[in-house]
Every structure is written in structure tokens, then in C-alpha cells.
Image (cartoon, rainbow, N blue to C red; front, side, top):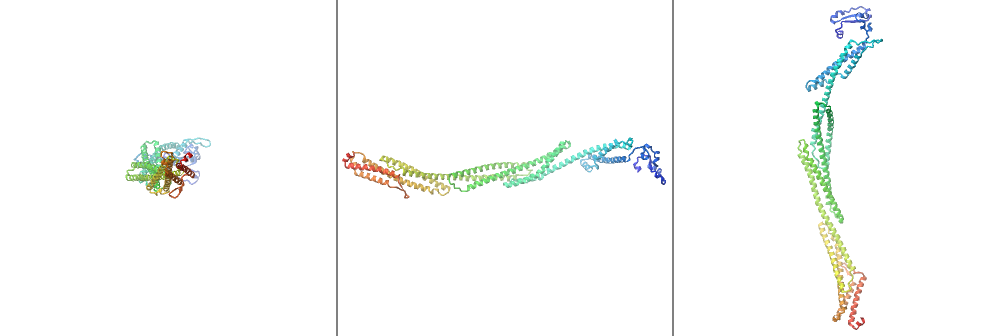
Length: 614
């Protein structure tokens, strides 16, 4: 053990024996025989004789010397020093291996070397901390000595240990700094590789499964429900893409942080990765947005088409139901409703065309991001469907317009029918009023022949008015027959209007003929009476004709009798002209005339009476 531990500079080793050792049997040690082999002399001495070989100032108190020394303290420091030396030396070898391995060789060898020896067996920070503490103690070490406070200098081995520790610390700091740089480069390279791996994962998924999902979705559906189903499927695709877009955002932030760090050697690669990632993500996002907009436009198109179809169905249902309006107001309301519905259909069809054209424009842009896929077939199906829907709606609208025109014509004919019936009823009323006026107001027969002739002429004009009214009513009723035939409805003129018109006209005709007969008789009466009553001496023979007197008397009596006879209508009913007082007044006037004629007759028979009468 002495050979292994004690340095070669040792020339003498003193083995100190306790005092009790000498009291025992003397034992001879033949150390001197080993001097040549050991390289130093070994002697066995007692403690009180030790000063023969070593100065007292170099011996501790245990051996009778004055040297102040704490062996346990020295031993502890020595153990710390030896441990630090061992650990630092081993750590230096490991760090040198790691650092040297990272400085030489190609990239694959460097990565392999770093991977195998990347982590040292001990923590460099801990070893450095231990070395700094040890150096601090070695530099500050002073003996506070014994109780007397005698100070002393460090041991020679401690003084020699200081430069060793400092040298080891310097070497450790240097290698550890290089090691930290290697770790930083390795960490940066690892982070870069992880980013590159994640970037390729995102790119590969978006250009692979993500693009395949979009390639498989080209239809727009043929109804609202089909479009909604496609939209729901697209939302699922968007949900899957959103997860990868979230990864893209995170990677973009990491790349931006590395770019801000400013490592020139990685700038080009990082920018290339960032550009590649951004291009793929933005292209995929734009495709998703385009698909979403296309499906939204298709949904709106089918929504407008469905609304328009419902409007056309409602209009067609309204047109297919045969209506029988009660009056012209109902017809006008029906026509107004038809016009409103047709206008609403026009607006709906215009909206459908706008939506359809917008959808066709979007479909035509699909080829710009078709990934080389031939979308001619899919686009043709979509285009044919859209154009087919618009053409179908146009044809349905045209059919409804034709039916509306027919219904409008029918409604206008019905308006004319109602108007004709209304005017015909009015003609009946007018004719009734004329009949009533004839019977109640046309009672006078005139005071003389001239006045009676005037009354006859007025009566004929009055009859012409009645005839025009009757003819107008008949024409209106004939028009209703034609309109009913055109409308294919039961002849409404067979109701009470035509019988009423004919009945009133027959009554008017009977009354008019009676009025004419009375006026003609009155003219004859007044004319004959006036001839007799006129003083005409030039023609005495005419006056003396008895037949004239008889005729006037006969006509007067007949006229008086006719005034008492009522007008008998074809249905057997009777009606008198005017009131009884009117008839009595007229009869009284006729009787007065008859009395004058009778008096004239008597005068002619008895001339002597003329003087008396006069």
C-alpha cells in the first residue's frame, strides 16, 4: 500500500509503535532487507524517539510535536479533492468525446456520435459547483490553530491542489461551454427536424387524404335535402381539416420564432418550410371555402326553385278550379289575385335565373383547382341539372301564363255577362217606368183636334223610346246567350229577366195601342165636332147633314164608353189609365162638346131658336 500511495520522493518511513508494544516479546522486523525492493527505508520506533528522525515542528501533538493538524478535516478535504479530480477528469473525457464527435465527420456520423454519447454520466453543473466550492475553501484555508490562536499555512499538498483544481475548472468550463453549444445546436436541429416532420405530416395529409375527400365531393344535389346532406358532409370534412389547420398555426408560430432567432444557416430551410406549408394550407383552405360557397349557392338555388315550384303549384291549382263569381266585384278581386300571383311567379323566376347563373359561374371555375382531375362529366351533370330546373320552371310559368290569359278572358267575358244582365235588368226597369208613366200621366185626350194630334205625335215618340229600350234589352239578353255559350255555362237569360222584359213589353204594347185608339177616336170626334160647330154659311148643306151629327154623337159615346173600359193585359190583369178623377175630367170635356154639337143641331132644326140662344 505504501508503494502505491507514497510518492517516490519518500526516503524514510517511521512506523510508530505504542509503548505497550515494547513490553511484549521483542519482534525483529527485517524491513531493511526490503529497502532495495521498496525504494525507501522503514524503521520501527517508539513515539518518544520519533524526534530523532523528524523535527518537533513537523510533528503533531500526538507525537510530541508542535504542528497543529486536524487529520479528519484534511481527510475530508482530501476525499472531496480526489472525488472532484476523478469526476472532473472523467467528465472532461466524456465532454471532449462529445464535442470532438460533433466537430468532425459527415452529418450521419455526427448524429450517430452525438446520439450515442450525448448525455454525460454526471451533471456538469454539479461538478463545477463542487469544484468552485473546493477552490474557495483551498484559497481561504487558514488554521485558527490551537487555543492560543496560532495561525499556520496550508499543507503542501493543499497548496499543490489549488492549481490542479483551477486547471480542471478552466478545462471544465471550456468543454462545458462547447458542450452547451453542441446541445443548443442539437436541440435546434432536433426542433427543426420535428418541425420539418410535422410540416410534412400536414402537407402529406392535406395533399393526400384531404385532397381525396374534396375530389370525391363534386355534386351539388338535386334538391334542398340533397344539398343539405352534401353541406353536412362538407362540414365534417372541414372539421377534419380544422385540426390540421390548428397544427399549421402552431407550426407557423414556431417557425416565426426560429426565424426571429436569426440563425443564418437555418433561415433558408425555415423559410422554404414556411412557404411550402403556407401554400398548401392556403390552397386547401381556399378549396374548402370555394366548395362551401358552391354548396351554399346550390342550397339557395334549390330553395328558390322549391319556393317557385310551390307558387306555380298554387297558381295552377287556382286556375284548375272552375270559379263561378257572384258579381263583377268578385271577378275583379279574382283577377287582381291572379295578377299578383303571376307577378310573384315572375319575380321568383327572375331570382331563380340569377341564382342559377351565379351557380353556373361558380361551377365553371372548378377546373382551376381540380388537381388534374377531369371534371367535365361532373360539371356537365350539374350544369344540365341547373339548366333543366330553370327550363322546367320557365315552361311551367309559360303554361300558367297561358292559363291565366284564358282565365282572364273568361273573367272579362263574365264581367261582360254580368254587365249585360245588369243592363238588361235596367232596361226592364226603364220599360216598366215607361209603362207606369204611360198609364198614370198619359191620360189627356186634348181639348181640340190640333192638341190631340200633338198628343198622338208625342205618344208615337214615346213609343219609339220604349221600343228602343225593349230592343236594347233584347240585344243585351242575346249577348248573354252568346257569352254563356262561350263560357259553357247555363244560359242565364232563361231566368226571370227575359220573361219580365217580354211581359212588360207586351203590357206596354197593349196599353200603347189602347192609347193610340183613344187618341185617334178623340181626333175624329174633335174634328167632326169642330166642323159642325164652325160657323160656315157658305156650306149650309154640309151642316144640315144629319149624318154628321149622328156620327159625332156616336163617336163621342164610343169614346166615353172606352174611357170606362180598363186595359186588359195578356195575362188577364187589368189596369186603368190615370186616376178616376182624370178620367172623369176627360169624360166631362167630351160631354160638353157633345152638348154643344147637340145644341147646334137643334139650332139648325129650329132657326128661330138661334136668336133666343144668341
